Length: 412
Image: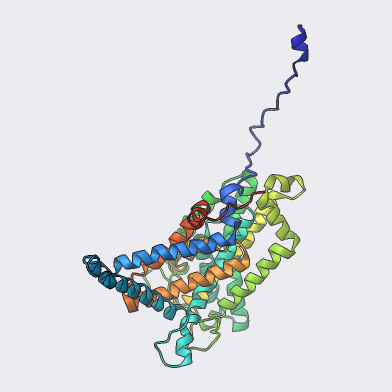
């Protein structure tokens, strides 16, 4: 052996990875994904601003007066600017009157009714958003809100129409049944994730379809949930003993579900920030391998967080059938809230107080969209476009930072 050979360092081969060992992704929340879920709140606010700006442009495109003045904008630009101002101001004035305070009616009660409608629409969004956001904090994507809400609503409704109990027992039992149904349905995804590494996004999406058709079957079968003598997939109306009490009297639709949502915000905040369980959730979300090395049972954490997340979404389903859609269980009882909750959680950066604010915003958009359509003839779909744009901009933090020339966020 030559002298040169003796001086060369010997290489040590790394052991080949065990093919039976499930592949882990410790950096799944690093980079852009991490910023989307728990990044700077300023990006969320600016995403809303951008979405409103783009939505305003769409409102202008649907306004006939604006389109008419474009034809002679060179000769009389003042007419075009006036039409633009009138279109935008009237649209958002109508949104304000429909969501917060209606100045066009007499009496204080009539004027604040829009605010109560906003709070009513916000309650299930907040509850379901908490369920999605809690899973986000543990590194899981709970996309199964629709299925969890459907099963929860069916379970709560079944208790409501299938049992004859006094109010003091009937209502709490129905709410509990909804929460348990949502928890168990989401727990399936958590169990499969923990035991086999099955991707929770695929599992929860597929469970949406399974849940939908299970509820549809139950609503189409006499003796299960279908109303006696009916051919439509719908149950009997909810009895009075399981309907959530109204908070401000019969003139307003705001019910106890909003109080339940506020309590849930406080509980989830405490869970994430003050409890050992919440610490484990956040540790697993940050880096499951590091959490495992520190002695945390990652698999059990996945199951636990999905059970709690599903229970929160289940409360949203119970809120719908026992408070808002009390005329009977249908396959549309989720009203798109299961997917809107993803937007609420993203906009709220998976923080309970942020989700509360985002839920109130989206509740106001929903309540105000009807006023915009009725007063100004603006399609309700414009609000849906604004909501979609919010998601688009939240999912592209570098784009928002580039538009507003914000400095890049420091990375650890």
